[in-house]
Length: 52
Image 1 (cartoon, rainbow, N blue to C red):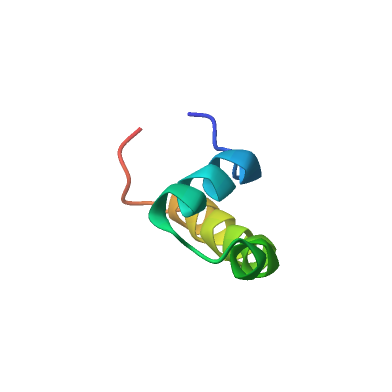
Image 2 (spheres, rainbow, N blue to C red):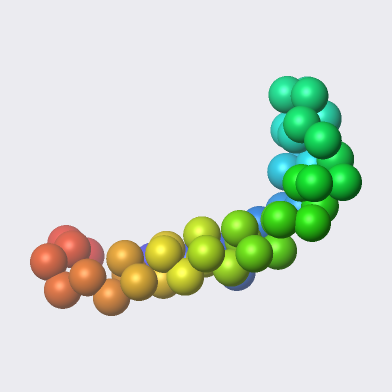
C-alpha cells in the first residue's frame, strides 16, 4: 500500500481557520507537526504484525 508523502498545508490552514486557530502559530508549528506525523506513519508501516 502507498504511503502519503506529506500533509496538504493549504487544507490544514483552511481547517485551522474554520476552527478559529491562530494562523501564524499554526504556520509556525505545522512543519514540525508534519514531520512527527509522517515519521509515525512510516514507523507503523514497518510493523511486522500488520497484515498485508
